[in-house]
Image 1 (cartoon, rainbow over the protein chains, first blue to last red):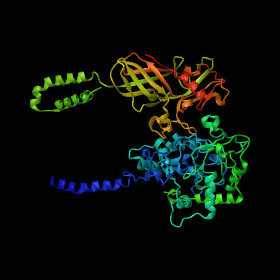
Image 2: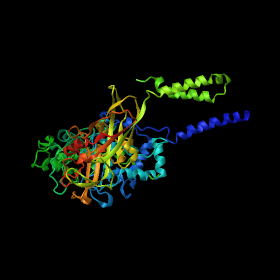
Image 3: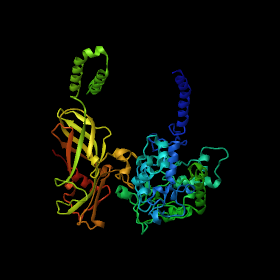
Image 4: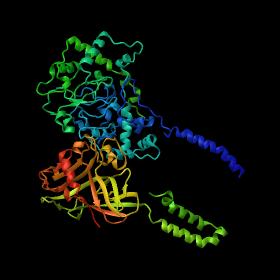
Length: 348
Length: 260
């Protein structure tokens, strides 16, 4: 008996210590990554208390975001159309193409600061970031898949079974809910708030606008800010900005969701953060550069119908004004964000 | 209301019985017969007035005939011959009322019923108080809160194919099948009924009168009412929220009736 108790005195601390040591590596003590709420920003819409971002959940979400397994034939991932360097949009593609080279009907929207967005997509049909991935997953010209099929594929992977356990607990099965929660953890972490504009606003040392940028900001506040409201550079609403109706796409915009005539030809007001790198522009990507966008707002608004009341008074700008405005818009580029290694694809 | 003692009496008595029977104490042995008798009487009495689990057994039917998916043919009121390939709907917010006007609400009450999944047809309602049941009330579909709460779990997991992708919200009820009357691809008809916004709210409250005190309540779900006033040649696809979906919800809310 004596030897047994002696051994247990020696062994017990080792077992307990080892358990505590190991558990810190098996995700039992998840490191939480709180959402950054920059000074002066409103309260986020998304409640992270119900789905806290953890190191393991973020890592799983990122893996899923970059995994073509999400598409029916394992060729297309979220990142096929949402590229980090171009503000999570599909550079050079007016309409993005998905599975088997099929084309969609709209230009890829960026994924930034989504925790502040009430509704998603160009028509606002989606009411919560957690269920947003269902749209590209099931769209026949994007991933052409089902969540059910993704869950079956993931359950067949030992790698993912471990990843889900790390993120959601030891007894955690892979479920549709957890796939969506993990993707959300990654997406809400995609936050841009370190552009030159932000640094100037925070009065950081050595950060100042040039004369052109200053003039541009004044023009911006006078002509654009009622929709592209600071600091998010969107008012999260849906507006008819007076684009001619495309005769092929015949896209009615938000009316498809609300069935309300007031929403005919209204589309999401996108954030202008990183607008410099997210061309082409508009819901159908019809404008290749910012000059074309400004030409539209000063000279191209259709007279065939009544557009958003915010655009009924003509915007008048000289060529110099336009150059200054564009100079300001370029201060919204956040290179720390575009090249942040934490968000880049990494093979594990 | 039940007290702690009421709720735990079976456990307490059976635990005592176990210790008693397992015990080899000679003092206990002397008292054995009396105690055993007392305990068994207590145990017997405690089984009265206890909360119980109730099964709501859903029996899908078409014109009072048992519904057989994919194989059987049925004829609608308008004379369309059809087969049913898929039937799924949510039953939520279950409420049981009793003869003595007491009301029981099931907590976190969301159940997905799928005609092809036998287990889903027997809805388990746990911890229902005793008494003579008067009505069983529930929603066909889910409330708006669930429709805006992101990714949920269990029967509400979007993995079940009852959540819309491009226009968020649950599909409250889904009926798919085939009929030669439909001039559609493969003669398919499909009704995916949902919509949670006030103007297009398609969740419907149902009250079923039940006059028996049994732990298994059988409800027939006769889907022939989905086709009341419908010609499949004209109406064969409703897959978005709106007025048409609401009209369909008003029809199918009549599908439930108590059967023996």
